[in-house]
Image (cartoon, rainbow, N blue to C red; front, side):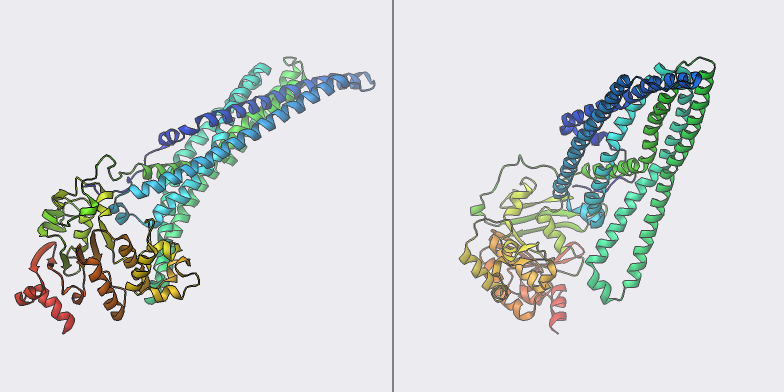
Length: 597
């Protein structure tokens, strides 16, 4: 049995999983990084050209001031250097722009891939995951977390690469130009690194919590939206507003703290940068005064180097919040993608001839519990002959729907076995098993699409005449005639249909499927008595000759059942048909008489 699937209490760092998932984009990513490196190299070359320009102008200016002569410079040399500087800047801009375009394109495609993987993952998750996880939290992973991860990658990947190359290149260039001033700049590096590391250490856990809190907020919004009818019926608006305010305030407090810690980096880095500028100017002035540095251009070029050296660290500081949010989002996305799935069954052969299903079903000592330590179904055994109409009744919580869920392998048995035509459902693939059952559930569900798409859902080449017969049998034909495009009218949202009409659509869907065996879980619970009579006739026609399981609270709908299982506390306490159970005078007769007396 697959245990209830929950996200880990403490999310592990999933950057390794991110790198692995990104592997199909390694080549364009490498091209983007190469272009970015070229852009950075030409950026680093510009201070050297500025230094040469300064050296062309500065001696001539100093000589003119000292001698009192006309200020003359070599215009040819200055023009040549100016053109070289412009070319460097242009190459840096073009390669940087192309790199950014390539990187952003592959990150958007990667985000698209992640959403597709999450969509596929959702379809592979066991039902117990959805029983234990808020829908809003799942949606938050698909939307907010993927978007946050995408934004973080766009803003941080190129910045980190650019910063790394820039730091290395400027580091080398500074030591070549003047190692004394380079040492002054290097002294500021440990201070900046300590600031970044301390901030990351404090802020990252808060960003993890903020993403989880955002999921809670989304879950509350989804719950309030879908439950508006109940909320308004019980005048619970104020209570729900207060619940949302509490979760929203908790999210706001955590986000405020995380952003506050992340925001400390930029002013701290700016303070260190200004101190470094002052130290470089003082050191450079002293070195020039005592003749250690012969060229004024070295100092002006070094100021640019300091700016280029400090800029990557400042960028890291400014982007720290985005990086940490992206890390938290990455953890949530890949923790979800790594949750336990339903096992693959693609290698299981088809074991039954679906054209000749007899419909014999046998339960052998079936035990099941949503919590393995607390069984809901206990040692249930029973044999259903082909073509029998089996009714399952009992008080709420007796295990009626659970029994059907086990038959369909929505959940795996704790122990025991279920056989269909002598074949264990454990040996059959879930797809094959569900193909031989048509289901009409108590919970109605319609898709955003045409009414025809809702009825012929996932089926192809449905006969039009048979479709009209089904509409007549389910009492939907009159409703279809009132629609502007008939069956091809688009149902914009679920509220376009009443609860009863949704129920009729699900019944028509099961009739269209025409499966060899049927499961009806309170199939007429949302329709009026007159419509119920009409549908019951259609159900009798549909179940004729087919093994069918009917869960019902209205015992009038199952009086003609061939076999009735009366369940209580996960056990079958009575078995028989209507007449024999009434004569028995037990739980069945008690429930029946309570409905008609």
